[in-house]
Length: 165
Image 1 (cartoon, rainbow, N blue to C red):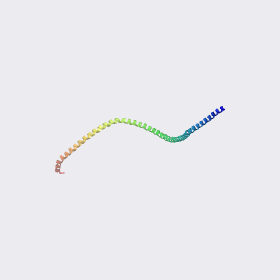
Image 2: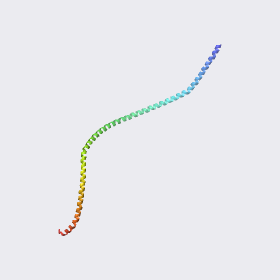
Image 3: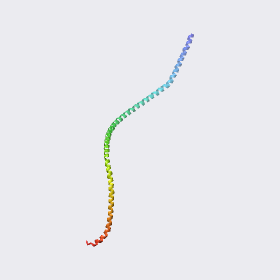
Image 4: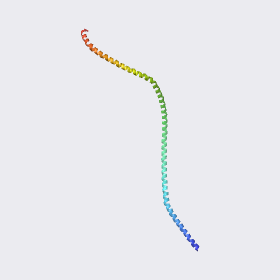
């Protein structure tokens, strides 16, 4: 009996240890439940909010893509018009270059005419001076005619009084 009595306390002590281990495990599990369940709930809320944000971002990017596509179509049409206008501008610039070369050539032919115009200008100045001198001479003649008329007019009136006709 001594062996059974000595073994019995050992069996009881294992049961106590298992009971204690079970209590410790349950209390540990309760602590983990207090941490894990709220954390799991927060994770689910954050995951749903993240999904909502990603969904909205995808929708906004979709609208942005549609808008950019529409604007790019318009831009492509406008770029074709710009390219056409640039072609016309190039043609006009070439025509202007030809015209400027022609004008340059014509201005080159005007230089001898400019020399002739300069000599004509000098001749006109000489004519103006000569005309001024003629004008002064005519004014002198006018003054002399006035004096002669005054000097001869009086004696002639007296002589006309003697003439019968």
